[in-house]
Image 1 (tube, helix red, strand yellow):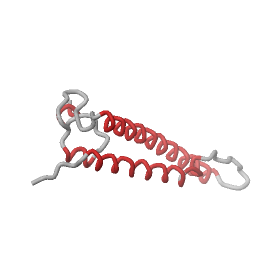
Image 2: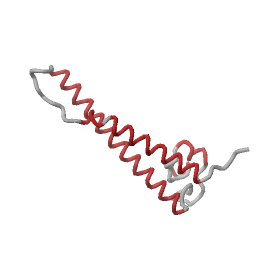
Image 3: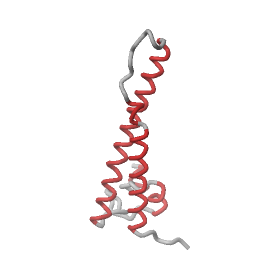
Image 4: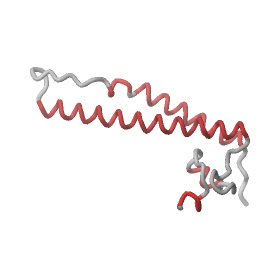
Length: 113
């Protein structure tokens, strides 16, 4: 027998993830700083490595921004009573899918098509 999760459960899950993302964002802020290209202090490979790390940090920040928007949209759907319903067909999104991806907006069959 499965227990149906309440909207409060998903709200807490989404809010916890939002807090986690915000903590990660503040922790990794310095890795996005501009790379200093002082050839006297670091070698060419070290500068290239620093630039690559900066690019990865910026990409990670973009992914976090996208996830924050998805979480905010999910919280808004919760408030409006639209959470857990497929955006395309209107059917219920299975709870197992919401457990794995609480920001899901489509059921499995609509997501596949």
